[in-house]
Amino acid sequence: MAAAAVDSAMEVVPALAEEAAPEAAGLSCLVNLPGEVLEYILCCGKLSAADIGRVSSTCRRLRELCQSSGKVWKEQFRVRWPSLMKHYSPTDYVNWLEEYKVRQKAGLEARKIVASFSKRFFSEHVPCNGFSDIENLEGPEIFFEDELVCILNMEGRKALTWKYYAKKILYYLRQQKILNNLKAFLQQPDDYESYLEGAVYIDQYCNPLSDISLKDIQAQIDSIVELVCKTLRGINGRHPSLTFKAGESPMIMEIELQSQVLDAMNYVLYDQLKFKGNRMDYYNALNLYMHQVLIRRTGIPISMSLLYLTIARQLGVPLEPVNFPSHFLLRWCQGAEGATLDIFDYIYIDAFGKGKQLTVKECEYLIGQHVTAALYGVVNVKKVLQRMVGNLLSLGKREGIDQSYQLLRDSLDLYLAMYPDQVQLLLLQARLYFHLGIWPEKSFCLVLKVLDILQHIQTLDPGQHGAVGYLVQHTLEHIERKKEEVGVEVKLRSDEKHRDVCYSIGLIMKHKRYGYNCVIYGWDPTCMMGHEWIRNMNVHSLPHGHHQPFYNVLVEDGSCRYAAQENLEYNVEPQEISHPDVGRYFSEFTGTHYIPNAELEIRYPEDLESVYETVQNIYSAKKESIDE
Image (tube, rainbow, N blue to C red; front, side, top):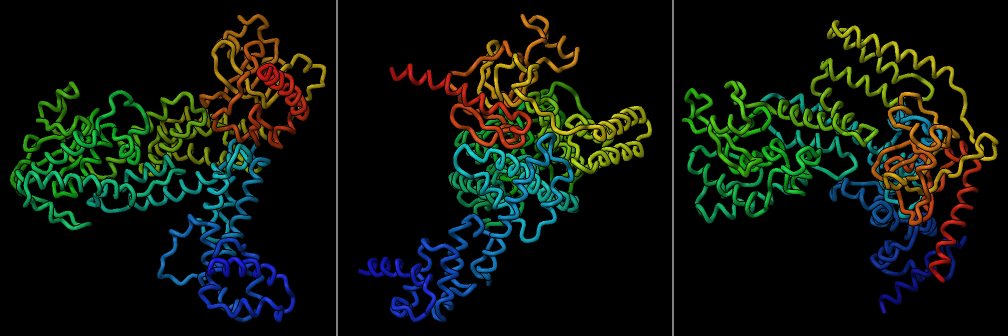
């Protein structure tokens, strides 16, 4: 009966909202309902914000129920943007109507900016000044980020270009915030020993689109600590670590009690939870990200050591990090408190090797060389983070497929945030900017940034004059070339010089020789690469050599390649190409081909019609043969 009354009232509300006269017949019946029933109706989720606005203008009773700080507008906000509710405390006074308006405005601004990016930056990487509009936006940044996330979560295979640029903008915003937090963290005094917090900042910076927080990672570690405590009770039911309260980590001084904690830790981590050093895939960046170490239960010596160290300290064992060459270790003091200690008064723990306890001699055997006593010393948080980022930097230099060099760029940013005067890394950063061609559209702010870097290098190390001069010369030459650039090059299939071009942008192709799947995003009537590339790629060995159409293709492995026409064929079983730059060129995947976005279509205005003809001939014929 109550449900029927609610449904009846539900039907009345929108109709009442349209009535001009507040004396309409149904209104008096509605407003006489108990307040909680009216509130339930208004919060049912079937009324839009516009409906609520109209309802609240019909009479005083409904206006009071729809007050800006009340439950009705809170529910409207929650239903529309549920992920934002975690940012509000239940005890805070919030003007929900005003929050709704601000969030709505931020969403419109976000979509406007995202829509503009493709036209502005189609021909180049998004430049350093490309995000200036975003930085100057009014309103909470979390609202803008939330709209970008909404764009990324749009269902289906459409809006690919919007998603591409929304991802880039969100990546930039979050990295800027994380980098500022890291710089503030690095200003802490040397005795501030939150190794886990620093490691999480590195994790967040390299994975800004993932939902990573210190709170969540600490919660996962706390659950491991609980398991260790459970095992510890079986060893010593009166162990002092079992009485520690949350947030308290007093150190235990007795060696025997510390040993019991480490025994329990080793059992839980390596026997029960099956954590292990990743020997099979050692050079994988995932091994350095703490959230991945916990998910995959594997890592390299430094990440495994930070996990081990954090758990041990929470349970009262004062382990310390040792920046040992080639293999990060922890040390455990065996000497008396206050005594003068040397390296032989410690046991060294290999968290990568299942918590094995080593002597000085065994440490040297581990890496196959003798080292000085200084390398057994403890290091502070900054040095630990330096080594983690240094590992990422080495991996970034090794990456061959990722042509955006994202890991290299991220690790350079992190390293230079900690040590801004590293000459060789500054040179590498300048070369990387130049190589990627991340130039601005109208101003040359990034050119100036490169020149600033080079000037800084020259000040730090005059001996780098030759390398600096070379980069300055090429940077200035780039400025001159940009001044001489003409407008967009349009390629018409009907042009006589393009008569040999068989394939069109958006088609899913297969390489005859290497077997990879790809999508065409550009073509030339003949090979436009230089003589050196032609020689290195052995193009002359092809039957048609370089005098045939060549195609720019996005490959499923994430690479971009330049393929000869005779090496390509239609993919009879087309599938999406999981390349990070697909959205830069295409707006939609139809199931058989990609549809070019507005900017790519301007450059190849006659290709889309050709694609439709090809799809009709190739895939429709295939479907008919299957049906028969």
